[in-house]
Length: 159
Image (cartoon, rainbow, N blue to C red; front, side):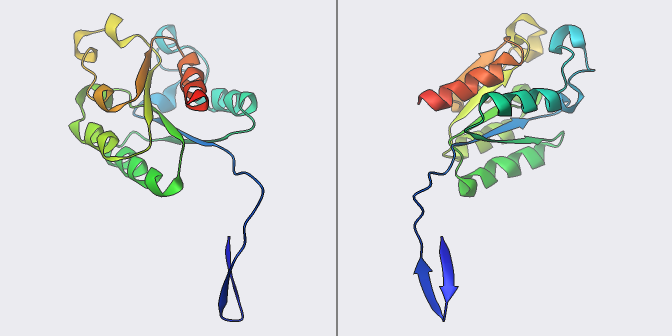
């Protein structure tokens, strides 16, 4: 920590270890979890799920961001460089299959990213079989429901 005292900078060190920071980013339509196609995505809202995850991983700082806007997702990925996250769990939704710009943003940052899809994209429509972001992610979890987010967090803890 840096504080100003009588026109001098004094550096204070803290013995307290900062918590591991993980960021979960959800893309378009994932704000509708719990009501959107429950047969595919389940009936749990992400707000209630993230509360459970934060309780499960109580020693971590788990931040959450959701947007339906591609540019906002890209901006958030860029911002992670200054915020020093250990990892990003990214469910880019439909943008995973279409957004070269979002793939470029994942490629441009140093923070490792695990891609997550609640449904098995390879068991769905053909247009969902292309995953543009995957080549820039350290791994991907598909079709394991909301459990995929937990598994991605566990990956970051193990590495």
